[in-house]
Image 1 (cartoon, rainbow, N blue to C red):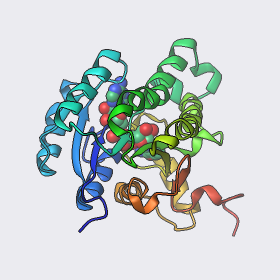
Image 2 (image 1 turned 180 degrees about the horizontal axis):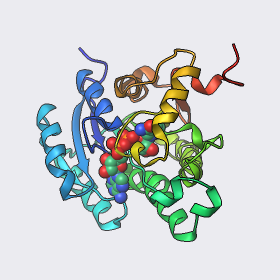
Image 3 (image 1 turned 180 degrees about the vertical axis):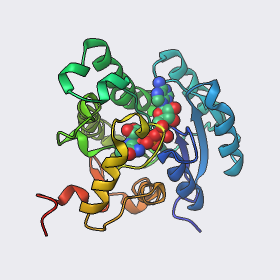
Image 4 (image 1 turned 135 degrees about the horizontal axis):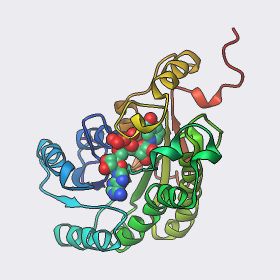
Length: 262
Ligand code: NAD
């Protein structure tokens, strides 16, 4: 029996088989969780329908986090399927306009790009957790989001997304404080770079992977399976004492100081 047997999980952010959300859904499914999935737009619907079929799930809901009406409708519908609530909310959503994630930080930033990056990549975590709150209350549930080292360190090209991820990580801590008394935990995984659709928007991503592999103590990149397994653990009762944390799944890259010197 898997360690998520009897848990219900809503997973956002599947866009392809390479999505981190796919790695998380796979791992949670293996551990016995019942899954519901969301899709951002009609273009992605059939892929998410296919993924749901693989997990034996019949709950597939539209959710563009830029639209408050869709957020409300998503959790209204979910409450009709899972009348007595659900246990796990996985947020795998980020977006920033291309110009804001390449080259010179100040050249690429403006009010609108800053706003979009923060709205979609950070505010959306609080927005969906707020809508999910009544359905998750009192179930020892867990909210999980995905961050990146660019939240804490200045990394070439990550730019405005790094600022949005810093906001996301702070949001994790404030949400953990708000939801803890109701029994709901809130955590983030800070994943190493993985080639996904979102990552392909970051300039020089391939170079970043090569450098990462050379420096990380495990001398390899991480996979969506690595992140998925850690996510399943963090959202399970095995992690009942962990909340408000940013957990690195990055082959150890973040611990390294000066690199390239043996
Ligand atoms: P991905 O492209 O597979 O997933 C990104 C998802 O965000 C897509 O499913 C897309 O539909 C969704 N999305 C974007 N705008 C949305 C909106 N308005 N409403 C609803 N959904 C929206 O890429 P991924 O790398 O799997 O990204 C998942 C998360 O992991 C992101 O938060 C990303 O920043 C984070 N992350 C990625 C890496 C990496 O190297 N790939 C590393 C660390 C963290």
